[in-house]
Image (cartoon, rainbow over all chains, first blue to last red; front, side, top):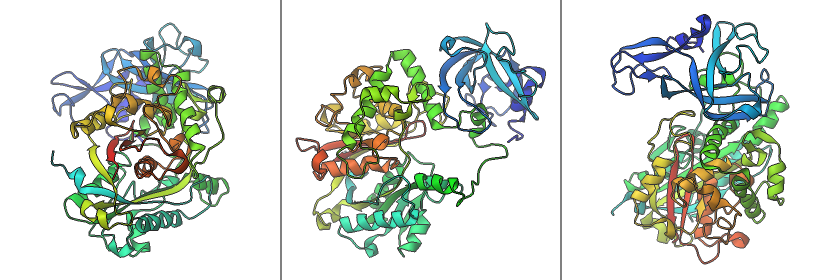
Amino acid sequence: MLTESNRFFWTSGADGKLRFLRCTACRNYIHPPSPVCDKCLCRELAVEAVSGRATLAAVTVNHQMWMPNMEPPYVVGIVEIEEQDSVRLTTNIVACDEADLAIGMSLQVEFQEYEDVFLPVFRPVSSPPGADGKNPTGDA
Amino acid sequence: MDKFEHSAVVSGLGMSDIGRRLMRDPMALTVDASLAAIADAGLTRDDIDGVCTYPGNVPGAGGFSGAGAHDLIDVLRLKPNWHNSGLEQAGQLGSIVAAMMAVATGLCRHVLCFRTVWEATYVQLQRTGQIRYSGGGGRLSGGMEWRIPYGAASAANWIALYCSRYMHEYGLTREQLGQIAVNNRKNAALTPYAVYKDPMTLEDYLNARMVSTPLGLYDCDVPCDASVAFVISHKDTAKDCRRGRAVGFEAVGTANTERVSWDEGDLRYLTGIEGAANMLWSRTDLKQKDIDMVQLYDGFSFNALCWLEKLGFCGVGEAGAFLEGGQRIARDGELPLNTNGGQLSAGRLHGYGFLHEACVQLLGEAGERQVPNNPQTAIATSGGGVPGSALLLTAP
């Protein structure tokens, strides 16, 4: 559900950029969105774009059908963004053979568009955008 | 150390029928377990002056919650001085700690605690159209919004991610992890109420279908229908209870020192375990070598591995070597693990099963599956991934 606190995140990909809240005082990135900086308790937070580069920190290949619109197998990973490794996303790793998945590998964000939401997913930096056959910003 | 734990005892244990698709009203299961626990303590319902449960009457909980505190209070016409329920506490066994505090403070003498699940029947009723699925559709919120859009819909996925990182860091193999499931199945063969008792070899484990790598089918616990209940009483009443003696508490661990999250913190270990484990040891002079058995939460095999290591029964990253071959954790091994089969084989009694088994063993009432040499101490835990808790129990 889009709310005032998370709308920026889920719509950020409209221009191809990934964004997080960042503390204007101590420059700490904060995720999930929160009204206060977890480091310095400052309340002046601003949305900032990041590079979209990330590192794979944990990975699983899901083989069980949990949801009618997601056909297994698919890859779920936890990624750490380049700017601050304490900022993590649970996401899909796309355009990567299972055999090539490796904790520590370098990833780049791309977005899958569903209605008004741009879902950030990640592909290996070595794979071209859309290499999984899906239009990264079109109908999926 | 003068501590509240010493004020409380487990005076009564109760269990309903346990099984897959019992097709029974979960309140009926709850009443069965509750009345059994009250009778086991040698009490009547008029003696019960407290009620405590996990998670209580949670809207939309489906088969996850079979009865709330208010529901049971009304059905049994109880008149508690105090009652409490909640999802947001230190694991399922956090509700036991709340009951202990209630008797230690003098608010209550005898607190009835229960945990009822009816997940197997609930799913069957959904399949046959007798319950309409009330979730689904629409957009998500409340934490799940960060995972569901990616198909990371199950705790199997979330825990698999941590397990993948642990394996990457420490070289744990599936053969080593599989010893937990194989051990538990072996133990379940001697547990009358266990859901799965058929023998299972390591080969069977390795050949089972994958759910979410590296977790296969037998790394995941078994949803079932069950209610487990306890009477937590003030220690001064123990001599008057049916047995004239009762299992005691030496220490609790309820601290949560990590982010409450499924993708933050130290990805090698599930969150919600370390704080509870450290707090447990900080409240007792007993050491790991003094513990005669462990009943460790195994909603997934990896939960139990994390507890084993964070409780210090092996060194950092050494759980795989500790589990290798399975002898150490066998019922006659140096540290018997999940002697009733745990949730992996006995069924998802959801936390309460571990305390039940610890009590049965410490009372010497485990029959065929009794741990040898008159065990005096046991640890029971719940949680991991969500905030957990640990209890150190002592024989009467």
